[in-house]
Every structure is written in structure tokens, then in C-alpha cells.
Amino acid sequence: MSKLQSVRGMQDVLPGDSARWRWVEDRVADVLDRFGYRQIRMPLLEDTRLFARGVGETSDIVEKEMYTFDDRGGDSVTLRPEGTAGCVRVCEQHGLLYNQTQRLWYRGPMFRYERPQKGRYRQFEQIGVECFGLAGPDIDFELLQLTAELWRVLGVDQAVRLELNTLGTSEARSAWRGALVDYLRPFEAELDEDSRRRLERNPLRIFDSKVERTREIIAGAPTFDHWLDADSRAHFEHLQERLAGAGIAAVINPMLVRGLDYYSRTVFEWTTEALGAQGTVCGGGRYDGLVELLGGRPTPGIGFAMGIDRLLLLAQACASLPEDIDRAVDAYLVPMEDAASGAAFELAGHLRSALPRLRVQVHCGGGKVKARMKR
Ligand code: ATP
Ligand code: MG
Image (cartoon, rainbow, N blue to C red; front, side, top):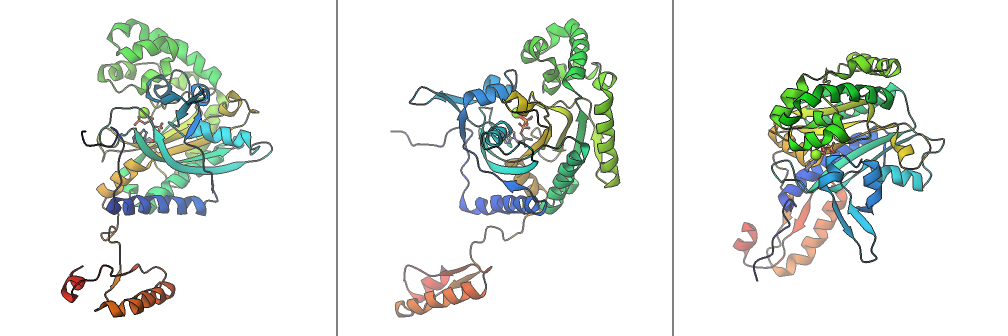
């Protein structure tokens, strides 16, 4: 029998690296605590219909990236490809949205059947944040302030930049959509295959294409600005003023539409040049229609998710992790002979209570003095 290997696109995190993961995750969790956000824990497996409806039938995720199968009872279930739809499901199921506001976060693995490469895996880690019940631009600002604080704490703030756009209301977007299709139709033959298909189903998504010729064509397309509704414009301007006031630099990118179907108004991405093609470390936006789409009362929402795999790569590229991060032990107690072993364990116990941050280990496995010292 051939040797068993991990499934393609799935990573093993070995002991030295797991310390790096925890360094990132603990720092992020700490910032979220300081902003008063509360963690939820969700199942990895959800009813497939949640994503079909909540992420959108025409999104890349639903069209070609999901791990979907029938369980033994014949129900179609899916390994979660993202957290927002599941988070809305949790909130609805447990009555967390009615007459309340929520600021929530979660973390854990997401699953997407993509082509694996550096910074892109089939199982990857996200930390996601979602806020419900707040319609104004103040919460948009708070989320961006929170992310800016994260980059500072992780020591990557010099390597990332904020890209920002607004997608207005769904009415404004459908007006734009018509103009977009009119512009793109003459180029139809030159578009890549995915984009040709999207021309009918969801032309906005063509902005998300990574194919060069398609990107050239779309660069000349009519931008949304002309169709943007007045309320969304005021919302967006307010947000930009707050950001400027706080010294958070943002680049307005009219091409930024984001991959998921449910966004409205504010959308943003934090990108870096330090990771090659996989340059987006965090993305999110407002999704005021999603809760209703999934069967709840109309409830404004906004959130983002960041890829911890990419953030860790970035923190390493910025050399911001402590040098001794993969050292497991600060003090190693070596009894010179087996008879002293009991005393060594007792001493280790005292050290651990007196110095809770000190990592203490007692030599196990016997051996000659020289071998013990060498260990
Ligand atoms: P991309 O354009 O890189 O495919 P996306 O728009 O599909 O990203 P989101 O759904 O917004 O990504 O997920 C939020 C973040 O999760 C991304 O910005 C990225 O950092 C991370 N991420 C997404 N897909 C992967 C993956 N396959 N492997 C590692 N990280 C990922
Ligand atoms: Mg993607």
C-alpha cells in the first residue's frame, strides 16, 4: 500500500509553527476583546441551502468551490466555505437579532475547492467579525479602526493598504448593471469564459476577474459613481471623513466589488504587495439585505473576514514575530540521578505557580548525566 498523505490543499501545522499561529490568533482575539466583541462558535457543517441562498448561486464559492455531499441520512450538507451566512443562521435561530445590536466574531477553518498555491489552500483559517442592527457609517468606521489596530498589533501596518468602495443600494446597482452589460456586450468574444457566463447572470462579478484581458476591458467600463444614490453617497462620504480624521489612509477603488453576492454600500479590502498574487489579507463590507434574504426581519449588517494563513505569512515577511517563538521551554530541570526526580518535579511545580509565564519542563527518560545535560 502506498504511504498515506494529507489531502491536497490541506496543511499540517507542526509544533514550531503552531506557536506562530497562536501568536497571531491570540493577538487578534485580544484586540477584539478590547473592542468589546463577543465570540461565537459555529459548526463546520451546515445545510447546503444556507450557502446557496446566503452566498449566492452565481458566486465562485457556490458555483465551483464548495465541499458538498449527502450525509448518511440523504441530507445535502456543506463544509462551510465562509462564516457570514452561518453567523446569520446562528443569530436567527437563537433570537440574537430582534431589538438588539450584536458585535460578534468567530474563528476556525473554512473549506474551498481551489487551486492550492502559496497563500491559497483548500482548508484555511479565518477570523471573521460581524455586526448587526447598526445602519449608520459609524460602525463601518469602527470596523476599519479595529482592523487598523490589528495591523499595528501584528506589526504589519506598514505593509498593508486599505481599498474602499461603495456599491450603493440594490436599486442603484441594477441601474448600473444595465449600463455595464451594454458596455461589455461588444467585447463578449474577448472575455474569459467565466466572465462571458457572468455577463448574463451577474455582470458585476466580472470586476472580480483575475484574467488580464478581461481586466483591461473592464477598466474602461462605466463606473458606479453616476448611478450611486444620494443616501449611500452621504454614508460613504461620512465614512471617508471619519477615516481621514483618524489618520487611516484609504484608496478609493471603483473596481472593488468583492466576490460575494450579498454586499451593499461600503465594501473594503486590506491588501499587501508582500505576498504576490494572494494579496488580500482581509475583506468585507455591508450586507444590509442578507438577514432578510435568509428569512429574518430586515436587519442591517456589516462584517469582514481575514485570512490567518496570509496574515501569518505577512507577519513573517515583516519579521514581526519574536525570534524565539518556537522555543517550547524556558527552564529545563535535570535531576542528576533518578532518586532526585521526585524533587525535580516538586520544584517544577513551585516554579510554575510562582512564575506563571515561565515554561518549565522536567527531564524524563533517565540516562547518564552527560546525556541528560545534552537533552
Ligand atoms: P480571493 O480573491 O483571494 O480568492 P476571496 O474574495 O475569495 O479572496 P473572502 O471570501 O473575502 O476571499 O475571504 C476573506 C479572506 O480569507 C481573504 O481576504 C483571504 O485573506 C482569505 N482567503 C480566502 N480564500 C482563501 C484560501 N483559499 N486560502 C487562504 N486564504 C483564503
Ligand atoms: Mg476566492
